[in-house]
Amino acid sequence: MRSTMMNFPLTLDHVLERAGRLFAKSEIISRLPDRTLHRHTYADFHRRARALGGALQKLGLQRGDRVATLMWNHYAHLEAYFGVPCAGGVLHTLNLRLHPDDIGYIANHAGDRFLIVDDVLLPLYDKFRAHTKFETIIVVPLAGSSVPAEYENYEALIARSTPLTPVALDEDDPAGMCYTSGTTGRPKGVVYSHRSIVLHSLATATTDYMGVSHADAVCPVVPMFHVNAWGVPFTAAMMGSKMVFPGPHLDAVNLLDLYQAERVTLTAGVPTIWMGILQALEKEPARWRLVPGMRMVVGGAAVPESLIRAFDRFNLHVVHGWGMTETSPVGLVSFAKRELGAMPDDARAALRAKQGVPLPFFEVRAMGAAGEAPWDGTSMGELQVRGPWVAASYHDLDAESGQWTPDGWFRTGDIVTIDAAGYVKITDRIKDLIKSGGEWISSVDLENALVGHAKVAEAAVIGVPHPRWDERPLAAVVLKPGMTATAEELREYLAPKFAKFWLPDAFVFVDAIPRTSTGKLLKAQLREQFQNWDWE
Ligand code: ADP
Image 1 (tube, rainbow, N blue to C red):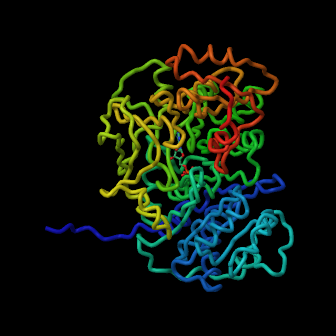
Image 2: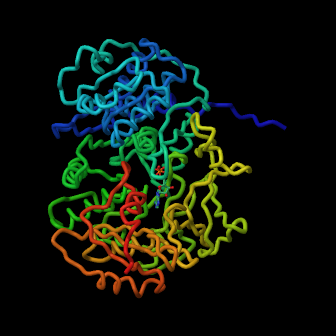
Image 3: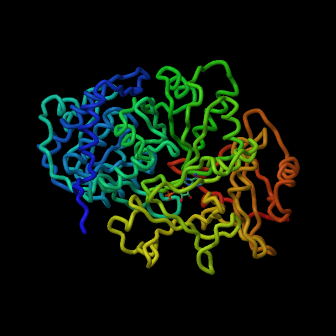
């Protein structure tokens, strides 16, 4: 017997057309470089995204051609998110926080033909342009400055363009690409398909995960070059939500002002952003009136339990998620399942600090030395995943095929436990594990505990070579402004929470902890800095 269902492609042109037709009046607000707010509707977005696609086609865009963006989060970037793939191209978002040489390397490796760049980012482009081979540069006049004659003016292109010529898209066609942030090696490119983006959007939109609705005002703080802002702009467009883009202004006060002014109900970003927001709120608790229960999707690095509780006190709800460039990115989201019954607040916060349970169609297993680790909450193994929005290879990098197991699972490089209820908890990245006297110590657990101390702003724990124990933990700690603390004080604070051999033997007070372009602790750099630490 055969199914009698249509074979209907899951492609982004459908999402764009639906958005323009059903949600023409939904708003798109963008903070510009001069801090004023720019306002568009979905009707503008629909018309302009199609005009951008048409303009690119006229400039020679062929199916599968890469169009790079070097842009902040705003309306024009959103137009590229849809205009490029709907015209048959591949949207390649460049990470503007990388070293210029790396940006150039990535653009070349991807074979980008076109570049769309914010006028305010032209000085950055100038730093790597000599090494790149873009055929056409399109400049978005965000700051109202005039566009140099050698470049195309984005607004002029849109104004004189006709809508794109529809392309018969296949759901498996490439639609976008991103490179990993390179925390653990050379950046590697992942190519998303229309189908993978559509399914990721549907799954993350469900109520238990990000829960995205037409009634939401959604503000992606996570940059649109960081794994497609975790898919948030695609998901929001699919649901018809109001979108609020922060542009280049990502400091706590600007964000809080924006949340308040535009009645934001759902926002997303890495933990460092929220640490800053929390400090601002604690300093001036009465300054902002936010929408009660505003949901904040936090991921990209572990979220300390103390952060979840602190926001609870402001009636702001942290939604902890886990993902990777290779997984589009969202794979796990933490929420307390009803079947677990009533639980004290402490237990609930601890559960929410875990990385969470897998989305529908996202499968997980933890592989230890002796095969698959049982779901008992203590056995550790490498997290391996598979699903329709998980990469099956890297772009043009056959040497990395070892990231996939022979039976088709992707090796994440994260060490986890999975408990009986299916909650995954990350202990460490394989490369960050600390091995002391033959036993593993979780740096993530120690860091999360340390930032729970009232005087600690940030902490990173690394393994440093030790003559007797192989490695011992060293904690690099940033104190909150104006605070002083001693190593003994921090050790005493940790002591009741951990086995004795887990406690760091050294605490070093530093001004800042090096971070990657996407807000992760740069432990490789710390390890290098402290490799000759004198344990005497
Ligand atoms: P890169 O691998 O270059 O750092 P990604 O942005 O793809 O770039 O990073 C994915 C990694 O980030 C994951 O493998 C994991 O180690 C870490 N990560 C992401 N979300 C979380 C989270 N909620 N808790 C802990 N670690 C996380």
